[in-house]
Length: 418
Figure 1 (tube, rainbow, N blue to C red):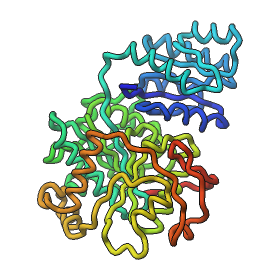
Figure 2 (figure 1 turned 135 degrees about the horizontal axis):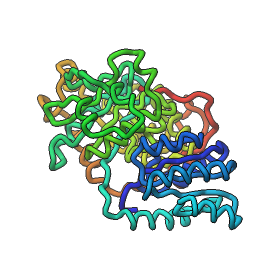
Figure 3 (figure 1 turned 90 degrees about the vertical axis):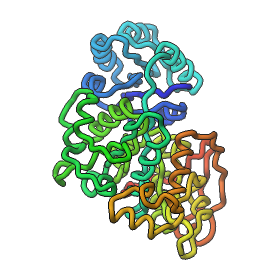
Figure 4 (figure 1 turned 120 degrees about the vertical axis):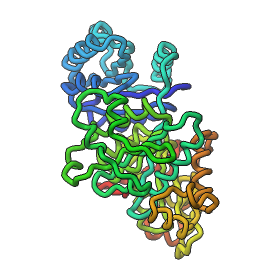
């Protein structure tokens, strides 16, 4: 696919969730911006999120879901919707098409059938405006440097685009986020001020809620009060991010800080997710768990990139190659240990570009920004045998599947990257 497509997914069958999400997320450029399991929420979600396609799994309540979607599609002329079902009876297909679905897809859904259906949508909507790119920077543990990388990456991306003021930085650590502080900004309004609306967020609302840095980067800060964090849901995150990518060329997200419903929403809708690790067993173990959880939920791990921070410091027995072998993913980028420059920049609230332009850390972030701005085709990761100290600490070997996803036993608890 030449363009990106934003999908609203409805599926009330948990047993089919991983397979369906996996099939969708294997499509290059396709992003799931919201996922519902209650049909009554479909009218509100369609009004709240700017999406290109609604994919609706009709089973098991075929008649009820078709009727709700008939009302939704009557109220939203031109909205593309795909129906998916194991039922092939003529009356079911006919009722779905009369309700306004553009395509009726049969289970089990194949990549070829999905590609053919999406190609029709792409031809119809060939003239639409392409949304910006969403980049999520995820820390595998507290203190690995995800916020520093996110803030400096946003600044460097702003130097690579022609129009100033087209890069946004969003803080999704709603309690302890420091994205604004690290750039010495005081935000009057925050993301909490955007989540009270059930409608699509307008550009004017975004501009009022964001604060501008001297570099041109506009920052959406975390809430001022702890209690405000409790009111921000996964749907709120999806709505805000959808509005941002419609307004900015790049949206760099510091977070998610937890791998919960909101965190999965961010990762599903991101063009690139940067998983930041350091050469510490705690960070690598969490990164390994994140990869396992994502693979089991159907996520395409080709969109997840490892970034190793503070390389070349005295890591005590670990190196980047061991991390690659352990997680089964190649290292997308490395940031050298440059404590003096980085700590000084943080303490005075300046990006590395301002006063430490020639530092090793800044040059590495520049390279990372250039790689994301003009991505080259990345090769598939190869399977490595797990061994050495890190392998013994993390456990036995596992299989690396052909898509680069890592299979393994499910975890009862999810990691909480900071």
